[in-house]
Amino acid sequence: MMAAQAAEIDRNGYTVIENYISQEELSLARAFIEEQAARHEGEYFAIHGIEALNGSIASAMALSVPFKDMLAELYRRQAGRDAAPTEQIFPVIRCLQGRSGLKQSHFYHFDATAVTALLPLFIPTEGEHCGDLIIFPNVRRVRFNALRNVIQKAVLHNSASQKLTAFAVRRGWLKPIRLKLEPGNLYLFSGYRSLHANDVCDPAMLRATVLFHFGNPHYESTVARFLLGANKRRAKLDHNGLRPVN
Ligand SMILES: [Fe+2]
Image (cartoon, rainbow, N blue to C red; front, side, top):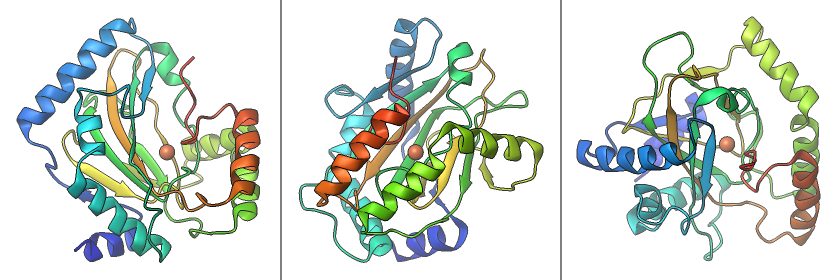
């Protein structure tokens, strides 16, 4: 069922399902964001997990069986094996606004999970910087060797290499995929295989997205858990490779 989409992710680095949610669902999701954004006084915030997102489209989708089946199939096609039966979709809402939102941009990372789905809710349409999604597609394969994963992440997840990547992208030396996001579309890519980040967003504008993470290739590795835990503590990352809320 997802064969064409999986092939497109392999070939182009991403695939998009247009108008994945209805206008009505989009309006409801935006109302949720606006309510949360007002509480955060115009500054950056992120909300992690099904419980914290209860009552929003993010948790409803994370709990949806057809949606999970879709991500599980993409995982199977990427990784060549089934995800753990206990795997759940992990949703995150990220809201870039204000000066603090600027610091969250060009923060290049790999996700801990193989499949990433991105649902934009608010995307600025004016100005030079609209918070485009930037992807270096499929720079590595899904590996089940936990140690190799840890080493790759240690090399690429330090602030020196992140700054260097950001600099090279701004200068135009590196030419990643740059996606102009459309609210209501669903963008699918392999967050595990692709180095990615979002572009800067005008501090006066609101950029809100829901991220869905699925399928940790290293779920069975206690070594990975231990080492990644230490690695993440050092890098001050949460388990999806995103900076935690301060
Ligand atoms: Fe990510």
